[in-house]
Every structure is written in structure tokens, then in C-alpha cells.
Length: 178
Image (cartoon, rainbow, N blue to C red; front, side):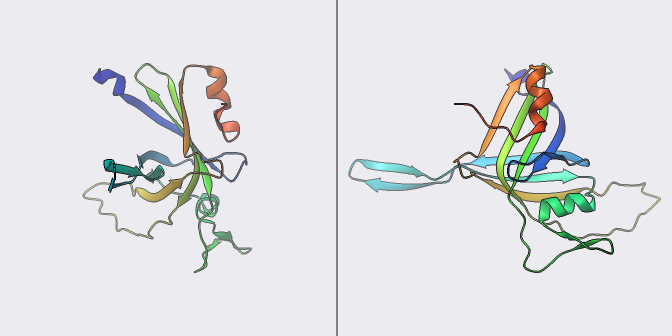
């Protein structure tokens, strides 16, 4: 039924380094992740076959802005001793874990943990404000890719109404128990 697909309330987005403590990203508005599995059609002695590759994901994080600390965490920038951040030509974004939640129509939390995420630095933009048109928010969009981690996991998700799970989800990187 269509009402099973209604989602309310994106919230609680965090990132963290390998098995570190999740750090909240305060200005997040939305996240959009496309998980896909590439394939190649081929032919064998048994007829046409489809050969699947590994799952991977690409996404976009929309924010109202990032603090200097958040930029250093997401993009691997360095803080300057005299203030500000320093971006080197050879720097690359670190592998991070991305944790977030959203609500379904029943009020349950749907919790996610993507395991190997790299954020692409965003463009630098500056706009003139036209007061006749009203103030518009500058929305920052950051692209990212997610691949499997060293254990072969791309992401873990759980739909729950358990307060125990919800209250501890952002305390550490979450892994499924097999």
C-alpha cells in the first residue's frame, strides 16, 4: 500500500572515522542515496547471462552550511594555527561512516549506517541578496560515494520502535549481528 512508503522526518545525521565516535552534522536538511548494482550482459554456452558487479552507492547531502570543524572532518582539511582552514592540492577526503535516521508513517525510526563514504568538496559560491525578492537560503549540496568496507558491508539499516536501539544508534558505528 502507498501509505507504507510515506516517510516523515529526516534527522540525526552523523559521520565518524573508522570505529570512532559519531559526530553530528548540525545543518543537514536531506540526504539522497542511490544504491545500485552494475551489471554486464554476456553470453555463455548456456545462453544469455547477466553478470553482476558489487553494490555501490552515490548520494547527495544537502545542508544549510558547514562549520570549519565539519569541513575538516568531511573533506580532510587542516585547521590553521592562526584560524581558518587550509586546503592542499593533494588532499583527499577520508573514508567515513555515515549514520542517520528518518521516521516512517507509523512513527518508527528507520536507522542507517553506510560504512565507507567519501565526500567530494563542494563548490565555493557567493550570492548577492536582493531584498525585493526576499531572503533565500543558500543550500549547500555535497556529493559522496559509498563503497563496501573491509568486511564487505555497504550499509546496515533497521526499522524499529525500540527505544534501546534508537537511543544507542549514534553512540558508535553500528554493525549487524549474524
